[in-house]
Length: 239
Image 1 (spheres, helix red, strand yellow):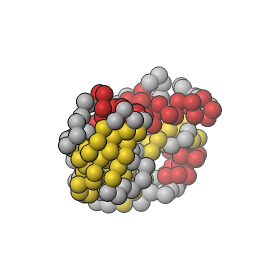
Image 2 (cartoon, rainbow, N blue to C red):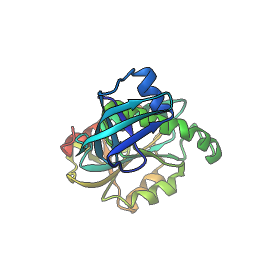
Image 3 (cartoon, rainbow, N blue to C red):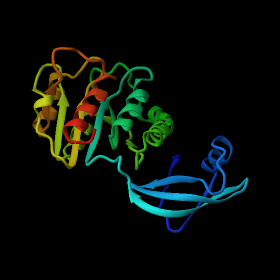
Image 4 (cartoon, rainbow, N blue to C red):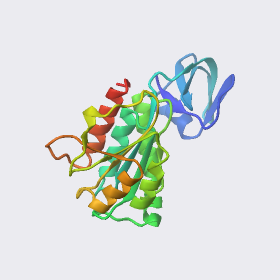
């Protein structure tokens, strides 16, 4: 069933205008009487189309149910800024897997180093990628793609989580050995192509982050967040 996102909690009637209305009318070629779903804050508004005009689509709310696809844990992926378009791939895939927030940051070994103004120009596209991935995967929310942070800002932000992890190539606990909560917030910090400086890892550990590794194989920086997100979702009963 087609899914769309709302910026507000719905009541009995949802009126859709703009690009979503055009998508319903022209791309999906939906008709009156057909069903679709709107999502807001983890709730599904299951609707029936009542009328379609060139300007708007009017839908009647038939039922409201929790989104079954939303995980019980709130996972934030802190990703050191990678080269080329790898960040787009990371955002798409961790959204599909269940992350609720993606925080790009600049670390010492980042090759790509956009300033905050340059990043702000890219942010609408990154948010659109998260939205499209959320629609495709049946999510009940659109994960947040945060403003660009420094590594120190990201380390400070990680303190908000109930459990914080840092994927560190120089060792730590195996991710498969970590005891994960079944609810609450989890943050995982992942390096760029060159990994982390020792001082960066030490700074994260000093605030309570647990250093973890995935074994002897070295994963690319765009592979690691996908693997880690999948493992965490599996270990918390969300796969």
